[in-house]
Length: 207
Image: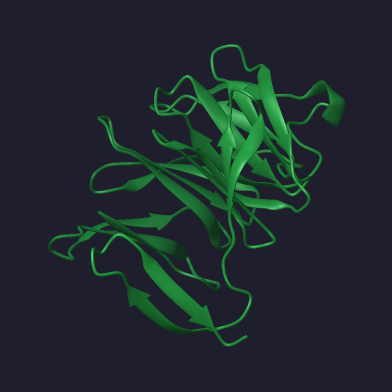
């Protein structure tokens, strides 16, 4: 399945297509401004959840996907709220007491689930990655960085965050430290080559 986000002012800001055939599988309407994030529940009952610039979170059910309901709360920016995945009922908030009742002291730009669905990790403009227990809503660990965090992903290989510096960081959750940092280019890439055994790629930039 493929989801297309449509910028601009219109009645619909997203559309769902079947990946293999390209046929329409739902029109994502119900929010008044552009969608900034979207996720898919890949198990029955299937659901789509979208976050919009109008400060709402919308729930869609399908296929074909149709609008079900929206949730609105002022000052969404620093909060992390857990909703039930079928009907969308609120199940609680993740709160760090040092952040004045919020999850972070800056905007939350990334969130991901652990492979076993027991924990979540959040990445924020306050330069921290935080790990939370889903059942208790308690903060388990946090890692501080020098730059704002823009995205995060949790795989079986580890937890990886992307910072405003452009670096990708691999985190060790046992120690709460960065075990590896991948640094990319700061100038346009001009050439690329692959090793004979196809295991390594080499890039060179304009600098």
